[in-house]
Every structure is written in C-alpha cells, then in structure tokens.
Image (cartoon, rainbow over all chains, first blue to last red; front, side):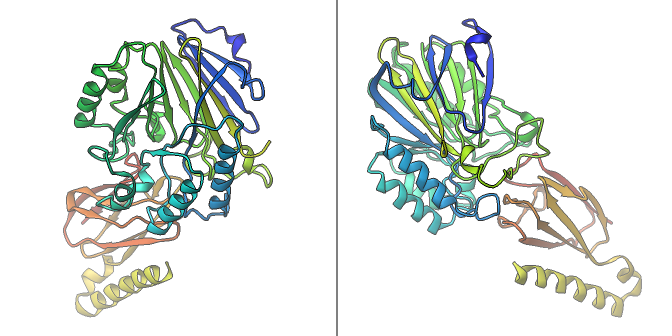
Length: 307
Length: 112
C-alpha cells in the first residue's frame, strides 16, 4: 500500500493494514505518516531505537504453530542482530499462553539472553490465575496497581499501561479510574514537546468492537495526551499490523511472534488463523521504533520473521 | 483432559441412574447437557435443563476460555483446548454466563 497516494491531511484519518511479507517503515511527523520500504529505513535515524515484540504465547502448541518458542527466539534473534542495536525491548503482552510458571521461566531466559533491558505489560493470557502472581512476581517490581509504570529514555517519556484486568461486558479492555488518575498526574509536569510512547496490550483505540478489540476508556487516556506534539501508541493483542493516525497520535499494533489472527470483518472469528505451510513466518514478526532526530517523529519498522 | 471429560460424563450417568431409581418423574428430565465452545461462541447459546442437571462445557477452540456464572459466583478454571467444565444446577432460575477472558461471549442456562 502506498501511503503517499492517500495524501492524508494533518487531521486526516488513516487506517491501513500491513500483511504477509511486507516490512514497512513509518515515519510519523506532526501527525503525518510516511511509509517506506525496509532498507530505506536507516537513513535519518538518530541512532536511538527500541524494539517491540508481542504475543509470544509461550505454551501454545496447536497446529497453527507448534513451535512458538522457536518463532519467539527467531524474533529475538532479529532484534539482537539489528545493525544499530535497539536501546531496549518492549513486550506488549501475552508473553505466555496460559500463565504457566514454566512458560514465564522460558520467556525470562530468552528475553534475558538478548542482554537488552526489557519492559513489559501483561496480556490477558498472562494473568489467567486469580491472583496474577506469575506475572507480577516477575514484572511487577517498581510498578503500580496491576503493573503500570512510566520511565524516561532519550528525552522521551514511555508509559506502560494495563488494560486486561477488568475486561468489559462487550469484551473491550479497560484501564480503570485509578490508572487513569495516575496517568493524568504522570504526564502533568512534562513539556508538550516531550515525545510520548504509550504501550499496552489491547489496542487503546477501537479496532473492532464486535471482537472486543479496543479499550473502553482508552479515549480518556488519550485526552490527557492531546497537548503533546508526538504521541505513539503501541499495542499487541490482535496479531496483525494495523495503524491509524489521529492528529498527533499514531496508533500501531504489532504482529505476534506466535500465530496470526484473522482480519476483522473478513474472518469468521478472532481465533488463530491457519496459514499455508511455509507462509507462517511472513505473518509473524517484530517492530523496531526509531527516533528521527530532526522533528521528534518516530519511525516504525515492522519486520516479518521471513523475508 | 480425558480425566476431566470422563469424570463429568460419569457424573451425568450417575445422576441419571440415581434419579431413575429414586423418583422416575425427576429422572425423565434430569441429565447431562453438553455445550460446545467453538469460534468464540457457546453452542447452543441458550439451554433449558431440569433442576439437578449437570451442564458440561467443552472448549473446542484453539484459544482458552472460561465459564463465569456471575449470579452464582461460579467461575471455571481456564479451559485450554479440549478441556471441560461441569456444573450441577440445583436451583431453578435463569442464569446468564460469559467467558471471563472474552466477556462478549454470552450464554444462558434456564433451570426449570
């Protein structure tokens, strides 16, 4: 898809899906996205980048992908092998499939082997136990509530949100009052020129309500971020790349490293989508996000495991 | 998985035969009803059973689901593929239930 043909204006609405085999760079400047093919991505990068992986679902063993550990490892190898090494790694949830302690152990070993700092938020598959201890014991340190937190890096402010604890009647994610109040305070003292990166498991925007792909009170969270010149929202959960730009806010969902899910309105349901043999690695992958030095935009490169 | 399925099936048979021995009228409508979970849907979505009956939900999806009977305060463990959950309904009434992981999945058990 050639984004330049769409000629989106500043307040324009853009929604696009990137599928098998495509690797795209997204440069988001003042709300206007530019897409380039991977390979042209490196020019203009400031040297600061971070990587996103998502939905590794360790413990999943259905025919769609019987080796989720292998594909997760391949994704991590991609990240570790990047020419300009990312500063850190963000995992946007569903680290495990069934919250099993041994799956969390495997994930911890694999993530640790990258020698990169790792920031996570839980997916609903990571908190299947009532007390959510398997996730919080490993990743809850220094976080608030159900595991939300923020940190600064390279002049940017990163916010990890948890929207999978109190799923709503229509299946949508939920942040809840306490977390939203914290978020409002968290960004209050920041200058409007600070680039903001928000990451959470379920998309903060409503991707597809019928499947619960969205966050009920996501709009309230975004209202606190309106005054910032560059906001990038990174999510997982839906196992495919979707992007949308609204004003200064760029939304992006990452591929899974485990299995793809169907396209809303096309597939019969949101479950794992079988793909022909040999094509699986075209629909799994990682995302790399770079800060471009000139105007505080972020470039996002989605890379499938194959190709 | 087989243990759980087997046990729930046995429960159904046991309840049925016990009912038949004791009060034939009750036995006629008591029993075990199966609900399949497939493609993020409970099927059949609405069932009607007699008081004392058991209902068994079996997950045939590649994704885990749960059964949450909100009004009864009953919540199954997370059911991975092929796992089942059985519950015996001892009270008459209409009981709505959802999947705790995908609360847009709805079902209903009417207990007569």
